[in-house]
Image 1 (cartoon, rainbow, N blue to C red):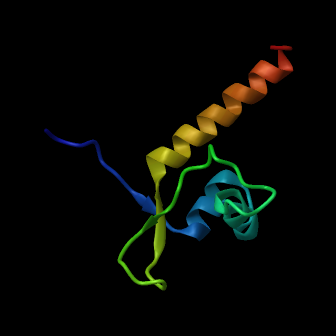
Image 2 (cartoon, one colour):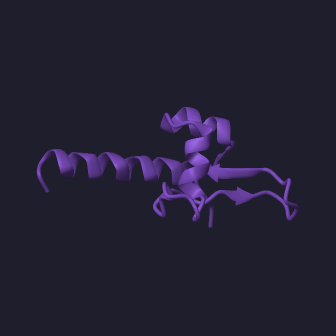
Length: 79
């Protein structure tokens, strides 16, 4: 079975794509943060060490963005 093309994004690319700062993004994925957002996609660590880079699947970020747009439209329409 063939997968559709996938692309990993680094934190700077995610920040640029969604329009949020890196520190805000880190707050969104930190379960201890008061700004934690369980709907935001979890990063993928490329390796096993604590300094291994973390990336996000672009398709996961796109899906999250679509959900934010949908939620905003529902709120704007009073639903």
